[in-house]
Image (cartoon, rainbow, N blue to C red; front, top):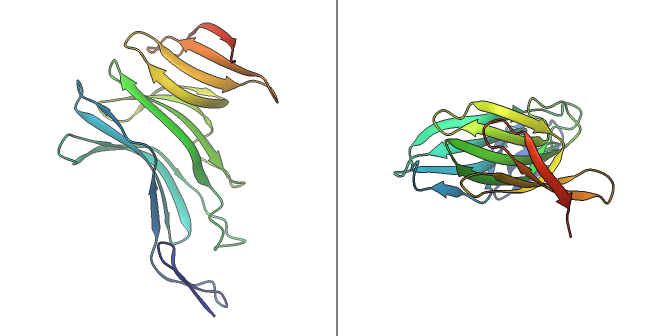
Length: 173
């Protein structure tokens, strides 16, 4: 039996052998006109090995860097794309890319859920904060991000963009 799904490729269910294909999904891109940098969250499923990353592109669409690479494989069920970037919110400014990332799946991951600050120049991680972070916004001076701190407790945080230091937090409405 061969499974053929446009966008996912084809696989033989009897042998587990991939016949070809793959899938790429993009999150909402974010552009910083001062830096001339377009950041795109990506999830690629190829050979049933999910790869999760952020890609930095220049104004002409050429790749400048690839960051937060996360790759995993579920050997027990190669047809299950067990880790996917289920949420990624991106903001930019002040020489940094800010990304709140949540990855679903049970396999060990190189990149954990959290809030990340990457250098715009090379995509390297400047700092990170673990946890369940939501949307991010940068006003030119401060970084704002929502965080789930309990089952039903969501707070809006104001952070220093240089190091992630908390300035204040309030209960989200």
